[in-house]
Length: 212
Image 1 (cartoon, one colour):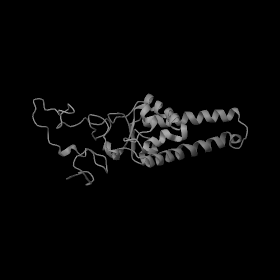
Image 2 (image 1 turned 135 degrees about the horizontal axis):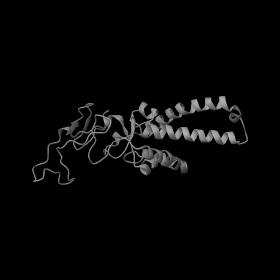
Image 3 (image 1 turned 30 degrees about the horizontal axis):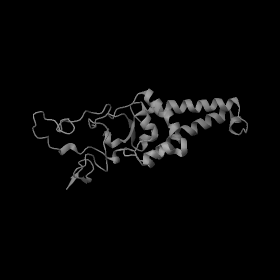
Image 4 (image 1 turned 90 degrees about the vertical axis):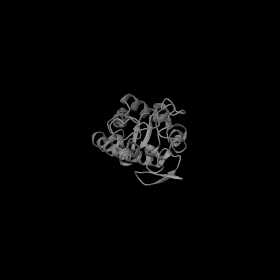
């Protein structure tokens, strides 16, 4: 038997909790558990007929036990790569133009100077405020992630703090070590998490899962 998703009409296995296409919950037609004196699921200890708590900042709902188990609910490797490329263009072009206008000598020098050090610091600072600021904002995503329909959230599907977003951003330097293995983990982990996601305890989910 199969379960039809009411949102996208995709056929899913009968035991699926989330749609394999859009990632939304399929618990709409679950029958409440049989009376057992407590009305609780004997395995999970939670009421099976109860609605999960709403996501902060959106109209969608997330399961009370945390992120879904279906991999389709999370941002895939190539989708995340595309988001990074978009953000790189958004940041890289303006920074390059400004640097060429203010310190053109740093664009073609073979010897490292104090000006090069200053611009490196500026690039790091701008990148930090952009990524940490956008990920901790009400949008829960950079412009690149918004374009491809991804959001960075915590265990409950809510926006993360600026401090956690900062830790996640600088943890990406670790993901880039050893031949980018930390980034490649996205393709092989069940919830498609990179090393910096594990460090910061964040999840990159598809917008459809949050049902914004």
